[in-house]
Amino acid sequence: MIFERFLKVGSATALARQLRVENVRSHRGRIIDKGSLYRILRNRVYVGLAVHKGVAYPGEHAAIVSQSLWDKAQSILRESPRMRACRSRAATPALLKGLLFGPSGRAMSPAHTRRGGKLYHYYVCQAALKGEVADSVGRRVSAASIEAAVIDQLRTLLKAPEVVVATWRAAKAEKADLPEATVREALERLDPLWEELFPAEQARIVQQLVKRIDLKPDGLELRLRTQGLGHVVRELGAIGNDLQRAA
Image (cartoon, one colour):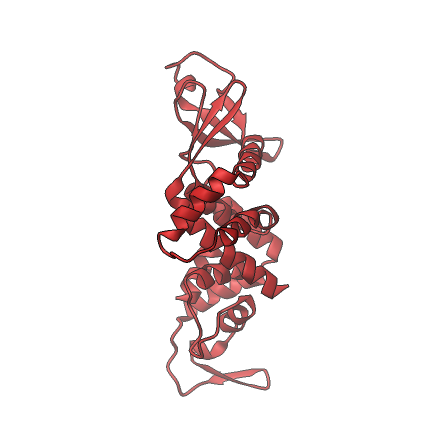
């Protein structure tokens, strides 16, 4: 399972955080952190080999990981962390996919173009391109600019007292004795943690928190998804503890 999920995620850091949230542990009951994952992914015992003083020999035990799966995992491990992060970002859906709507009320879809060898990402109003609505200021917007503006507004909203209380009530549905201060602390973690998250994690949190984003001529209007607030509190808490332990 770990080898297969590593191929999909492409990051031991991201996979370790996911396994922690899911409470997946080793056979000794220990939390599987990033270091544990690297040891597992590099352990040739799983492909039926026995290793002595750095030399691998055919083992007497059956392999539980196929050679093909092993080779693919090693190929990813040989990449630099920077390259793996770039590949992860390229494979991640646009941060605001399905959430962003233009001034006309019509959905805006992620798109990209390449100029001078550089790739540019943006969101475009399909209705405007098709001539279904009049051209407007929201016909096309830079993905980097609009995503940064949404995250800034989201960080501000999560500090608002009424949002903290709403989140606390949502989280209490699963944990009745949860203190409000714990919820506030978890929401405050979004600021320092955001840049540490991988693109897939950022996209997942935004999809859980945001119901709809309307692009107005004078700014943005965010509608939060109340049902997702409780889950995000638990996830932020788990990720924060994981990073503190790793540090």
